[in-house]
Image 1 (cartoon, one colour):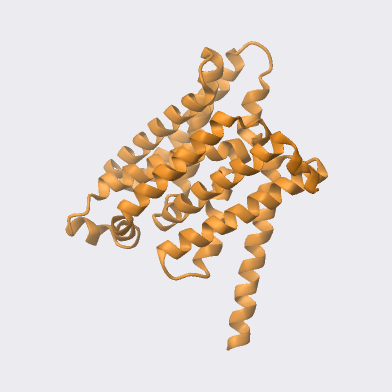
Image 2: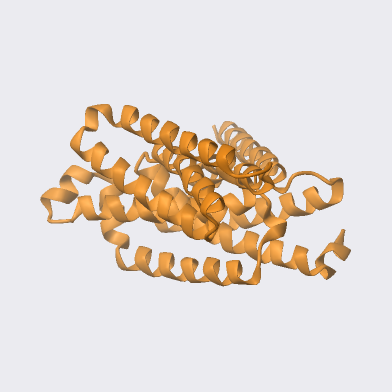
Length: 271
């Protein structure tokens, strides 16, 4: 199994996996704390429209996906604030329209396009050196933004009404968080695909929440778990000739269940 590390494409895959894990670990806890999991799903599926458009018009898929993700996050943020009682409906509409646009562009693109399927289910082994640099730059930018707005994000996560009364710009932070989620989705789609990205955003954060008390500790633990799940999943995919995205999600699911059961057993033993 270690011979895989001697192959350049697998080295790229592991480095990309670690960089994606950092983004997942930082953004996932904030998304979960602010109850944005369903919004993340809407953004992820709407991104498919940008992927389809990019393949049809022949420009960068990463740029198309990022543009679609940011547009979807802006629309969802506006509708969620303007029509808060119908936020789930708005997210569902953006979700469906984005996917439909992607499917239509896929139909219009000559021939059967394998790239569209790889973005749905993940294909991390096709990661380029340029992708690695973009992932690293995003990790740095996300870490700096979270560090700078940490206490504001913490206030937004635990009591947004009180935070607004204290002068925190909750609308701006809400939009900023959605944009960070959108760009994290674009990076993670390389690994697990747009269909499975919600699971990767939530499972490490859910496990971390059960073991730590602060938001910062939750992010750190979530990063460590994400790295573990992704690296083990990549080696499992290589060893058994499986899809990398599905393997990572299965490993993450087993890890989440194991940590949950360990917590329950430990709680029973201390009673």
